[in-house]
Length: 445
Image (cartoon, rainbow, N blue to C red):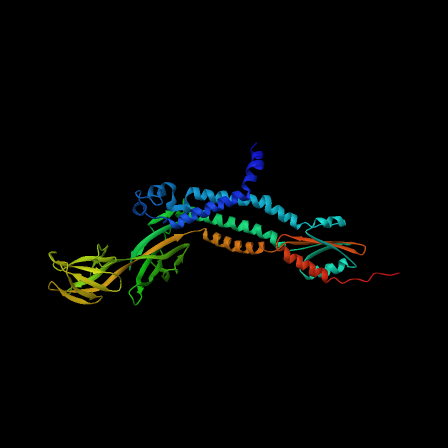
């Protein structure tokens, strides 16, 4: 019963083109949703950006997103199930349709009766033409010719029949790569100040078999993070100077990364994704270099600076009874100092000094933090290979599979042919072949 059900019900359903198109549209739709809805963010992020009242489009709230796993579409069980079902449909179609069609196309046979040529799309009959001359003309046009005792069969473009099979195989490879990457890959985010060493810990998304991919025997040091600014003060590019360290702390690789130029090491990729300001280094009179963390501040109202800034409070007395507020808007090294009354006292540059509350305050430098997005996806090589084969298969599919038959009966030559695409070009080619056939003189006694 099971075999009968598979053969008569399930396999025909899986090989149905309408089902494959429907599955492909569903995969495309959910892939779009995974692009529009931010993936792998914290629950608080979705609560703030997708509230229940008012819900986006009247229904899309953080509860719906979390319940349907739209916050990690590409690793959701239902999305993987769609990929598997689509892969099963492609596989079934390949074995039930494409491979039999290729097998039929590889067969060759002769027409032995003139009546057989009437069922062909193109057919004609000529007097005083030789089948041997036709063989030569077709051979010049790259046809593979089979000839025997007044009968001829020629074909070219068998690659066009192989193309759809390559397309199906490449799509299966892409699906396998995507599923394998979802099960074995991971994604992490780290915010690391300049000069610090870290290991990948802050995993935001991971597959069920991703543990071997997470690095434990090597770490990364942020040697320096900096930003290039335009003359107008806008950010031009982020840069992070990173070193890969082995267990003993030895440097095994060092690269400067920026947007669209990541660091790759042992299957793990580090992307430049974000930035922050971690701390400020300063001295009071002749004190050692001190460091205080900076906090991100969001100005309120029209009286603010109009954009986010970072600030801290620097004590100028040992009993913490007096101090100044330090504000900086970026990593360009400009600092605003405010007194306890909230009024601006002065502006200081990096390595600059000023007198406040009877002490000399020297700003040494501001310490930036690099925001790194870290990914490992073992399925990427398979996906890239699949896309390469897909392009090749599509090109192969455009090749026309053309067939020509001929039969010599006395002085009459019956010729016919058909093709699966580019029928006008095939007709024009066949006409040229016939026009180039020399007319033989009749043999007289």
